[in-house]
Length: 340
Image (cartoon, rainbow, N blue to C red; front, side, top):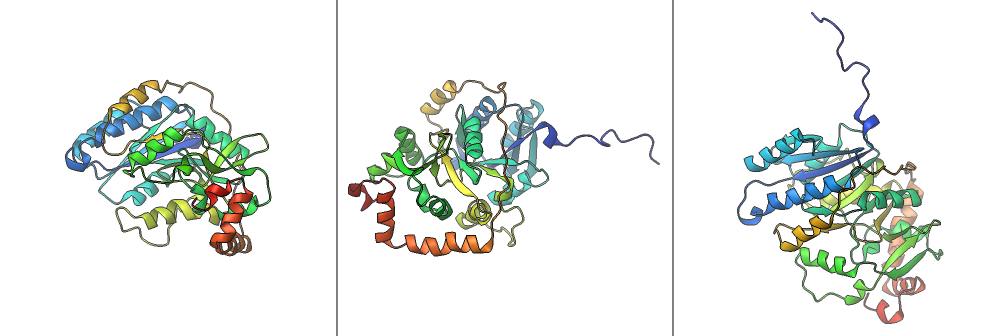
């Protein structure tokens, strides 16, 4: 027997209150060895996120088989409304955890981030500016990196082959770029020209973006994610599955992979360092600001366009001589082009 009317009847969905989802998969099984500082790093991640997002942002954390200390912390943060949703599961792997966090909602923008990301002031508004300035943007990263144009961005290069808006320009924050590569344990023996110039595109309203994107922290249009993979995601960590879920779907729907011109996040890694405390203190609370409106244009593509841009054109640029001529035509000095 049912008495009365369910109070949920005809109530509005989350999408009416929130417009942007953040999904963070978390795996902290213990607090020793590799994971000794992991919870402390994640706490910094969440603090930086709460300081830098507007109030129409929905935070989902997927506990991917963490230990009791991390579980207790997540439940505490949920009760304090610092997280809107916690999904607890056994260790099903990073990408399955991402799918659990995304599916069940219908947000137009979804930021997917590792649990060791420090978000910086202005990241959200500058991400929206890139989407609004480039209607074909499918994903916008926050951390400029070396030669991003060379990874799954042939459609951007093709579409702007003869445009002066696609040019090599000065790296805005080379120190942050160096810090990123230090955080992933690279030695300091890379080509220093990468710290000077990178390939960017400038919109008609003078918004600049780096061509290409990484995926340890990036914001996607929903249609630019593979939310129904045809193959079972069996590996716990897999670069191929990262690529299949987060990278290739973007250009399959005609989307451009871009990154903000300036650096708006830090990769902290698994070791807590003193600089992190100093940087988080600099992150002022901007959560009460008015959120920018997204001028959303749904991405579409067709098989012929995809084939021309991402197969034929890609094959052409795999010729080193043609690629070098292309880079020089886009403003890279000849002295750099040979080894860039």
